[in-house]
Length: 478
Image 1 (cartoon, rainbow, N blue to C red):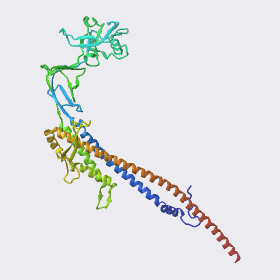
Image 2 (cartoon, rainbow, N blue to C red; image 1 turned 180 degrees about the vertical axis):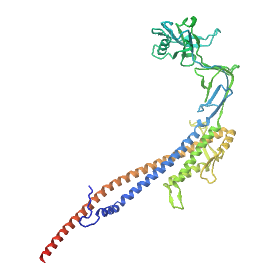
Image 3 (cartoon, rainbow, N blue to C red; image 1 turned 90 degrees about the vertical axis):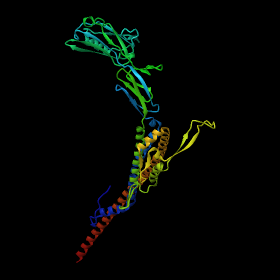
Image 4 (cartoon, one colour; image 1 turned 120 degrees about the vertical axis):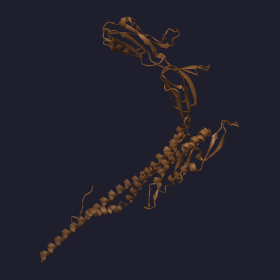
């Protein structure tokens, strides 16, 4: 516990004196705290550089990945057919001609009624049979229905109204408790006249149904009318011996052309979908890699710069590890490109594919160069596109090799920074432990000084009392 011992007898400001002495005593701890602050600042700078270098690694990995070089653009000759390139490793360029023979739709069945609010104008039960629709085989204008699974009997509660029937259908389930996949509702068309509509929730011929029990219960004894469910069907290579059909329960075909998704909206003939390599998308990925590399170089320069005028450095000025990273990134371009290519042969029958060293040379062939002052990367998309058009295989191979090399380089750099940061954190922990020990030592020293000055005040007080007594005795003798 700290107590005030300011000179009650001596008149000295002992608290101030003790504080000044403690500042001298704490000089060693102050130096340790300064080291901690510098180490924490350095860690922050290392992490800032590491974030930028990691971004280079991610961008380089994208360029070195085959999927990037499978980027495609798709087009369609019809405004009602949409072709979207999904790319990926399975993507393949080419074109496809087809007729949209039919589009997918869900089933709709309606019953026209004279009064949608009438009671008792319905049977006590109806039966819904799930099944599949097939195209009209006997040319009678009606698609063929094939029952699939067990029928479901739906009871219409009393009083039997259209509203209660639709509610019963909507809540009905199959034997295993699953939904019928049908939504029923009533629509008024004129006054109380209207229709009861039963709509399938999914498109496709396999999601059909048949309703029995409502025959003759419509307006003027009408039966329900049904528009059957259908699949979307494309006839590929129409009019040739190589023609074939592809169906889908929806209007989307995702496996017809590798790397391309086709969506149709109406029946149409002679549609052509074309898929071609998208060099612009590839160039965008290379540009992203170059931009990330420049961001990393800029960050390294900022963290290691030294201002000659003010003679002030940055947190990592003189740090060899970070400065070496800068040089390594620039050398990745200035040194040109060489890489090992794996062949498909095994000439010496050792079970391993043969390899060959490829000296690609200047990366200008990929559109990548150094700036005039040699401090940044530059990329020309037009130069890249020209080279890619002339020899796509060569440029793809070299581009993937460079992306992989830059990814490996930056991965090593991020690992190095991580180790440095880990070391600095260990150093900070050790320094903080020492600072905590100093706290104990300084507290003990302050208490000792306070006791010493308190004793001094007590001694001075005793001497003053003795002096007063002697003065009194001497005065009495006179």
